Length: 361
Image 1 (cartoon, rainbow, N blue to C red):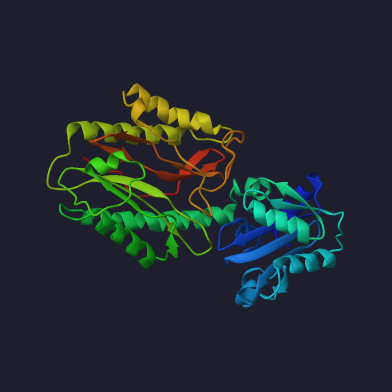
Image 2: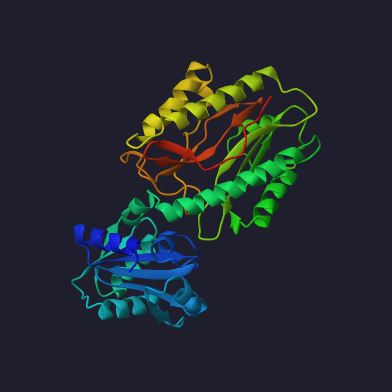
């Protein structure tokens, strides 16, 4: 059995559970991929204290053999309810109606949970954050995959930034980003690319439009790719359209944001709480006079999805935490700047995974 499943099995004992059901439906739960290696869109895992099953239909039987060979495959007949096959796996594992089987309450709709409780021959117990707690801290293989994703994504920025010119639309810039991500190996985007130019750069999650770029104005490019193995990148750079010098106030804003990014990077180390990490950049921006214009958090966990699970309130950073560092300043009807890097916490501090250059005036 793989290490991740063994870790979960030990957690089941501590939680006084006999097993855990983990479902992905139309690819809505990356915990299945994390535990099993199976990247298909529909499956149920049953992890007991000693065994591990994957329950899925004929579309994925061959793929399961390739991606999750350590799990016992339970083949689903699509004409029957999935709960029949869950019961078969429970019986095969020697579990009974008295067994306590957890299910991920955050991923299972109430209606599905109610139906499961009626049909599955075990006592179902809602759980939260069992698998996600392990996902917070990446192992060496995960960090290598994230580093690759970030390296490729940084290369994409290096290729696209020189293409910026007056008259080009935000949509055209986004196309260049997306096309080059695919060209260099991305399976898909981590999220819909954001390109925000001029006054649109004052909207942190602007909906990329057909607005044309103008000389001298800022262009925020926030994008990332999902790569083979399932891991994501997420980078933001702010560049300026050639043909005119940027507004001096915008230059000042850029320099403040860049320095806030740098001081947060230097402060990051094992044992630091998320709120304290956020405060380092926030306090710097506030002291520079722009505090009310930094209107979002400093970053988020990164992994199998762009916003990977993390207990921001209670869990300190540890070696293997991968997070973003993305301070920003946004002024309505004027514009904005955001600079985002992906970082991994090490024993001695932090390391940047993104390598794209910052703007030079």
